[in-house]
Amino acid sequence: MNLDWLQICAEGQTTPCVAPIQLAYLAALIIGVIVLAIIGRRSRDFTTAVLTLMPVAIAINIAVGSIAVALRLPIYLDSIGTVLVGALAGPWAGALTGILSNLIWSILPIPGGAGPVAAFFAPVAGVIGLMAGFWAGRGVFQLRSDDVRVGGFLALAAGILAAAVAFLVVQATVGIPDLAVEDPDTLLSNQTTFVLIAIGCVAVGVVVGWLLGRTVFDFQGPDPRIRTYMIGATAISAALLIFAVFRLLFGPTGYFSGVDGVNDDGTPDSFLFGWNLTGLSIADPAGLIAAVVLAVIVGVLVLAWARRGENARLFPVWVGGLTTGLVAAAISAPIAAGVFGGVTGGGTDALVALFRTLGLNVFQSAFAQGLTSDPLDKTISYTIVFAILGALPVTLRTMYSRGEATVVE
Image 1 (cartoon, one colour):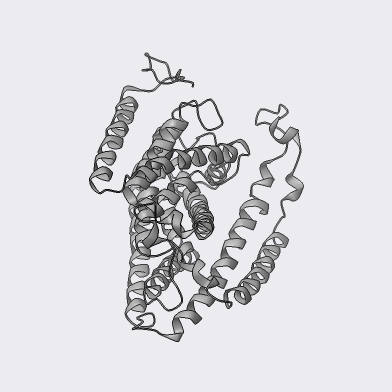
Image 2 (tube, rainbow, N blue to C red):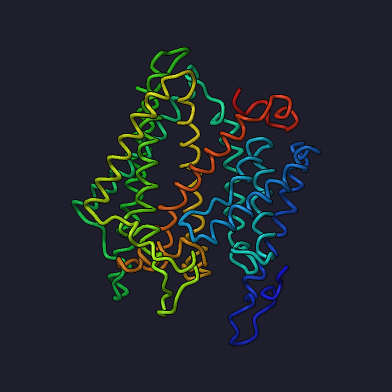
């Protein structure tokens, strides 16, 4: 364990230490852990089986998260265990697992640990656990093609898409106000305008989702449209997921574009043996065309696959992961920008640096990075957990407080 950073900074000292206000923040986290443990105990979710599962889940979070940090991946993959516990044991156990994972990780001498970064993002991990339990309780891991609840997930996805389209329309027409100006009055005016635009886009999404939920997706009893819509939504979602992953890795500003074997100061980089992998990035328009073609191919293949049996059940899983990622991005951005200046030492720093070069300030860059990485990361994590839950025998599921009611059958 490395606890060198867990000391109060002297005057003028910045590392390795924590400021008094940061130490108070960490103390509040410890209190939060105690409160969550009490709530979970009273809710009767903390059975012996759950208490046995939590250390395993914490180990999964730290191990996979450390690998992601070591490889400088633009995603985290450090919440798989948290989502798993949330699904099997409820939101309180999931939240406690997430918080403990980050606190323990922060004191271990491994990539991403031995420092305050993981500890300060513990609240985000806690919220991820809460949302995993929330969505599991609403059937994201068990919905079938005859379940009327599918309509709610379709409406929610349509609302999110409508909000994104509204933002892109505003950007292409009216334009997004410049948030990098130095004049205080102009900056305040632009920030106010940006907030109003964001609220307006969210309002559009809420209205569209509500209207579709009351009309097109208002299923009553067994309805053959449910299966048809789920199949189509699964294929479209798979195509969008592949497109996002391809651009994040192989795009002109993607992961491989920054692996050039040289540090910022010009010295050789030992990462991946100093290999220059920038040749794997594909410049536009060729890169964009390749991403679209691959996404279409995958979408068609998934469409054929989803028509068989109950394979279309992945769509609600992806909606749960997407919304969890959006909430996580909204919470993590202020922490990344306010505490660490947008630089946390992980692969996502490259995305923050990219957005900074586009004229965004630290907070905006951290938020943009979160909106890029978090939804994709959580969608992948939910998919992995879905596969794990599907492989668990029924006798093992029933050992956990929520396992029988919230996982696939």
